[in-house]
Length: 283
View (cartoon, rainbow, N blue to C red):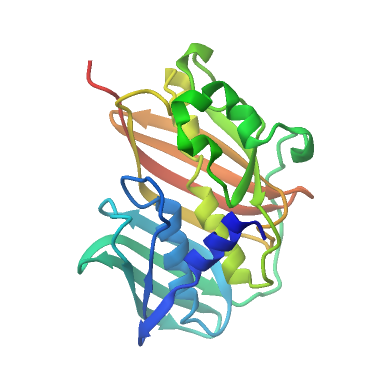
């Protein structure tokens, strides 16, 4: 694994405090608040470590308050249901005894059944696309240390990133190839947590494109509000997956985005929906 991926795996390896209580920390980065994908991935790990049978097939989460990166996060797991086919867990993430994040996750024992899926978009393969630093080079000066920061997730943009409103208004869709930057252990829960982490990185990009809003726009405020995922098929987070994202609606300060995650062999493995807060700078 790369050092950045090794750090992410360590981040997701929560310490157990007691019966169904875990604690996690945040990386030493220059962030004003905890990254949403981090707390979602950690909460999923906490839930999964109390489950004996089945793999996660869905999660629904709310981001309640901004997390403080300097304060450890406590994850309290509630064993809602243990059935023969389905297991349900609820997780409350707290800092200083104050809830910052809620997650409900359902786990399912594999069964035989019907199968169909949406087709994967036709896009160029990841290997021939520019790296993150190559793609972001025109805006390196405005990104500061964030430009050269080692990344646990290798990202290859199919469509230009929304970094400059000079690009003009565009269709609300964004497609990005991603994978963990190295080989992960053969733990399905860890692969699901890494996908959950990555799923929050770019999903709100599509909501800004029709409005000529870039991430580097001064005064812009963007925050995840809620996040839902459905895990359809088995996958590995350390192999290329296409994250195809689009926004069906935005109104006022609320914007919705949907995402589909496909493996390199065109299997639809995860569906994602998120609503985010999108506040424009005051004139």
